[in-house]
Length: 344
Image (cartoon, rainbow, N blue to C red; front, side):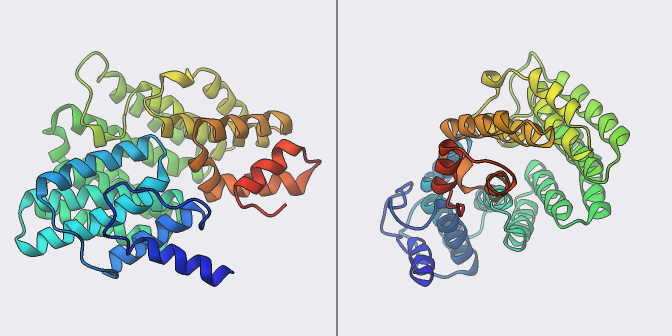
């Protein structure tokens, strides 16, 4: 059965005759497996050549893919994103231009973010490196900075904290970002925030808080004007506050994480993906404080907010598995486990 499921996952990336955004079929392998398998095939050049399309159409589909990501519509991304990568490579092979390189960079950046969510570090590093290369060819300073941020995230996940700090802080100091207006400020803030999170992972609570305050100051400077470019990840004082929840948890102070969560108006966050992330971080906070019932209730709210995100993410599945093993279960918890393919 397992072999058939994997083969089915690989097959989805070959469905190039389907329109952009076609959904993965219900009843098949979990959406996270489909997405990872499809990205792996596309990045390795496996599968049939894509249907011909224009660079303008590809740009519109990159924008649509970002909207799918923000809305946690991952079944759509499981088809759309691998096909974007295939199509981008085909267009570039026909005649490279900076614009086409820039579209490929944005596609690979989105792929990296999804692979980070799915805890696929090796494939994520490959995607981030390709994003950097295409961004450099396109001379897109913002995409170069974002690729540095994603590389820092992956280095942190691999336990290479010194490398993660170096990537994030060097990226934040890039003079090009200081000439890039409000979007440059936003990416500087995101890179500083990434460095703060790395310090949290190292247990440096004071350093984490100092850098988070620096990121908050950058975010505050953006208040009141036109929003930065969309791929600056919605950087704002609200998203810095969201970052504090997870950072305080990893720095060893779940009480401070809970205080940060209570100060965050959930509905004001800019996307379903961000609201889902906030609820996931709050569930972890309750778990670390020993508040089991509140943790389960928060996971169920997260599932209602973003079912595909909650059921697919390995970090959430690990928390559900831990709850099943650590105490009495309820029908609600067992139901979430079954829907998330966590053994009960």
